[in-house]
Image (cartoon, rainbow, N blue to C red; front, side, top):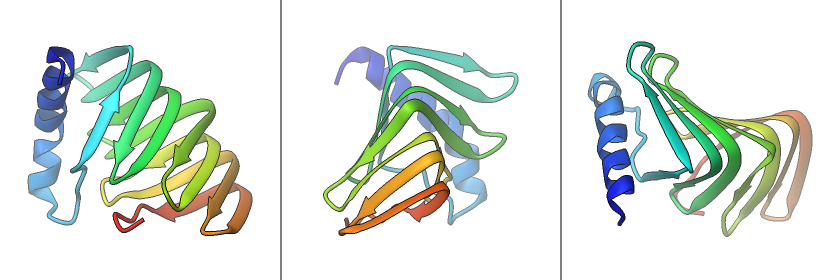
Length: 133
């Protein structure tokens, strides 16, 4: 693992440690975020990721152009034209993905989701990330 990603992992862990200890059901565990540029704003408790975003959560790969991780709002937003999600069972896209600490996710704007042969299209799709897929 490169030094840059180790540092990012440490920052990410410290950034969400209060959230993880305050709410036992909340979990941003087993998540990896890669980006060309990362900006930390400690005052508003946010991490901004720019360009070539790749997020891996429990076997799901989410790609987008930019992302914003907010401790205050307790969510990770991924933006793209479109942003995409892929796993063994799921394939989808939307303009915005919003992921919450309980690993529920909203696909917003021209959302499409193919899950185990079922195709869904809507402006808003809510989905629960399952580590079993």
